[in-house]
Image (cartoon, rainbow, N blue to C red; front, top):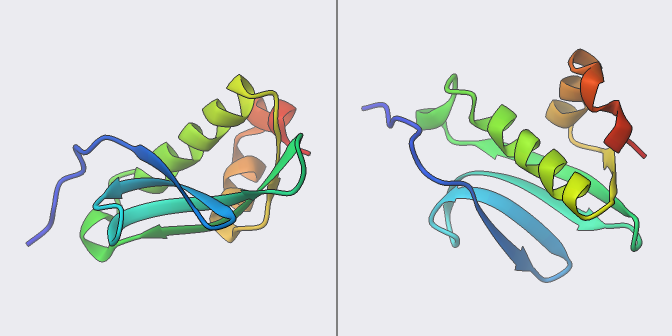
Length: 99
């Protein structure tokens, strides 16, 4: 059975990292984790989407939420996660938030 993506993207902090996630906070169905390098820069570390949500644009929505967060908080992003690296390579219109 394939789940449909219709859930809201939520935000939480855990130890020294932050997550935008879908589903349950303890066992999210999808998430993008990042951490603060310093007060002006965040590092996008991991993007994970469960098999049931793949192909529904969830990773893109999580990345756009990260960009929105960075823009609203005057932060720059270092993409360390392979998905986020490729996202920025394919979407030049967001390069203003790159560190």
